[in-house]
Every structure is written in structure tokens, then in C-alpha cells.
Image 1 (cartoon, rainbow, N blue to C red):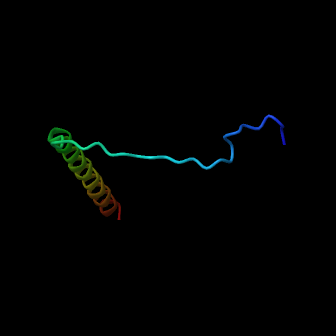
Image 2 (image 1 turned 90 degrees about the vertical axis):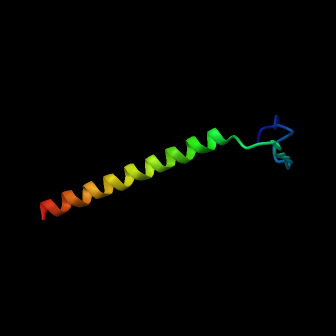
Image 3 (image 1 turned 45 degrees about the vertical axis):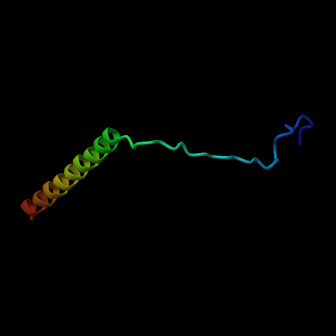
Length: 59
């Protein structure tokens, strides 16, 4: 082992996380996120339907 070992190495670290209290939620950001999730889910479902139709056509 090297002699120049960092003094912080091996020590336990204590982290403290504090939340930030907001008076109002950011409704625009929430709405955009929900919209993006809905679009992504619809695209995924459409792709699954297209793949299923393609498999049926090949059989």
C-alpha cells in the first residue's frame, strides 16, 4: 500500500439532503411531462400493434 494514502479514504461520509419547499408546483412542467409520457406510450403501443400485424401477415 502506498504511504501517501488520502486521509479521507475509508472515512464515513455524512450527506444531508434538504428539500426545497415551493409555494406552488410547476404545473406547466408537470403537464409537459405527462404529455410526453402519453405520447411515448402511444408510440410504443402503435409499434407493438404494427409488429403484431406484420407477424400475422407473414404466417
